[in-house]
Image: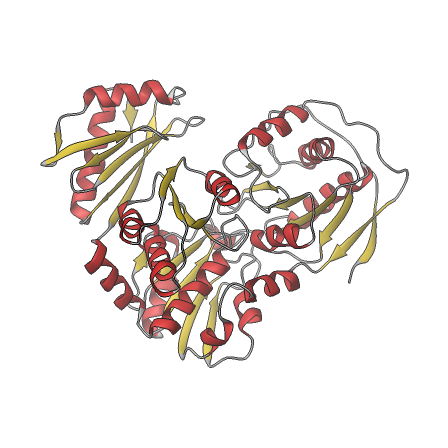
Length: 483
């Protein structure tokens, strides 16, 4: 059921550079992320979409997100679009699923995802629920420089408000076995990180013998003083609570709950290079699913070995879930994953979803009757161990020509590294050096910041650290750096 709300007309713009990154536009609140610039983006979206297209607007728990969302809804409605605004704050996959279910032309989400509390942002989803593709993003950016055209109505503009979560819960029930999960006995700890994922798992499971305990369930625009990112350095309390309560698993959700972090029953943080293979292995082995495995170049070798074992096609794409989503729309994809903790699966929207991922882990535990630590041990016994590390190196200036950088790095490489032959150098998103035992090192320039992201995966933490140390030495030989 929807209700009507009236919002005042307003259309004030300022000139500023607005660039969309791997998934939308993000900026510091009251610096570049202002109401004037938000209106400017909204006018660009209205120009980009055909009138009277249907557009859904959602928002997260960040500072003034609901007010920014109302401003966007107001501009879109004034420009003649049919707008539905979420009644409450929601997580991004809820918006994406509703775009598909309600057959909308697009979705606009006010969120800065896992960025620091001082940021807010806007994500745009196309009619499939995926992030707007790269070429369409560039089209939209070009429209932001145009003055707004006339409005579609005069005076006060009416738009509708609806509850998007109910349709998302129905969507989830078609993709995981809720009855099987409800029979799982024990405790699960969820860290909502003060974001919009709080309470969604509880709503989905309803009455159950499984006990859910949620950390940081309340809204806090400061997110407890750190960025709402489900990585090990921000999950100390979750790690301790899982061990203390002897829980099955810890599930951490980022600010808009499209990313997930997983803690096993021994209180160990699992890297995405363990999480994604565990999911792929479960879907391929226990559920018998087929399809291509697609992953960002910064993910690793275990999932590739699983794909090869089960005869599944495999592909690496540049960093950014939109590249994975493009494959999910065009091809039969079993699962897609990225190093930042975002995962998507066949039969669902071509978008990452932390809630769905957490539920699939619970389904895995219920279906196999194994502890998560046992599943990981079995995975490593069959496909090898993974120890992943990442280190960001500051540069004197941004590396703008990735092709030239990759060429310069390749020319400096020895024939062997840490006693292993260098069997391949891939240059999809920065040079990725593959060794004969499948260990690898990736040097990925930011492109916009004076920053080089270095990634390494090997069977041991010591070896991965040595690979990162080599990257630092290698970089210093081709460009000026400082820590």
